[in-house]
Image (cartoon, rainbow, N blue to C red; front, side, top):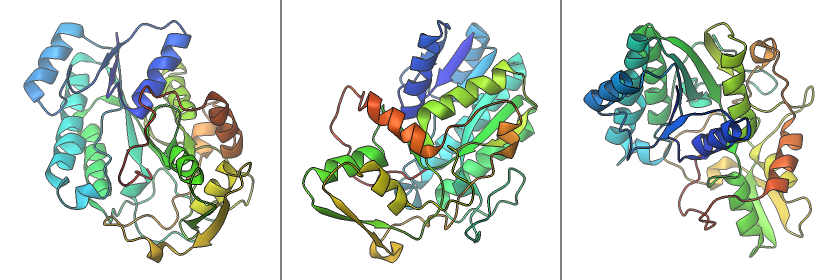
Amino acid sequence: MILITGGNGQLGTELRHLLDERGITYTAADVNELDITDKASVDAFFDKNRPTIVYNCAAYTAVDKEEGEGKVLGEKINVDGTRNIAQACARVGATMVQISTDYVFGGYLPVGEERMPDDEKHPESEYGRTKDLGEQEIVASGAKFYVIRTAWLFGSYGPNFVFTMQKLAETHSELTVVNDQHGVPTWSRTLAEFMTHLVDVDAEPGFYHLSNDKAKDEDVTWFDFATEILKDTDTVVKPVDSSAFKQAAKRPFNSTMNLDKSKATGFVIPTWQEALAKMLEKGDLRENKEVAKGQINKK
């Protein structure tokens, strides 16, 4: 049995559609079906269903809220919940595929350099701290695992930077977007395909990095991403320093990830421009097309 936790989220929904296309049977559970923070419920669910593969897409990703009112809930989901799933996987012999984040690193990484999977971690936000602790719980559990760190997630099934820019462009002739945070966008479809790829090829367990690819020596910022999103509109995108936007959680200066280990598994990674073009062809596939209010998580 394949289990998807957080099945109604952006990535969980993408993964469900991918498996549906492939005719693969699975069970998707969101918090109403399986509260991962409730150890007794998790254990009972695993004892009854005996999953062999668990794609853990459940997470608390309200980055700024986790610095304040969401701190307790963030730890409960990202640490305790992850521990519960990992220990249950170890007990029944299931393979766990966990999604993590560039926020676990922190610290300064010069432009042009890339984060390696074995780099030291020094998280500088509550979100990064709890996701790092979740990674540690998985290792300690003894389960067979794949931890995939990703960043700047976008896709057709949830509120994200692409939809925010498109919505703002409907009413603004000019937008300012930060040009001093560096990284590479990740299409949720590419991430979902990589999650299943690691299992399908029985890759070496451990830590992997996955974003979309970039051209050699290309430097990408949120300004570049926004410019590409709106290139066929009349809206002008202008660069601005991140100090113009006050945010509770500290953002990584450079979260560009090295993809060599992931590519070595045989997975072909499209560029972020190719991925964005394909995503825009699909459009907004959410049932509720209202862009969520509040801070978009630039994961």
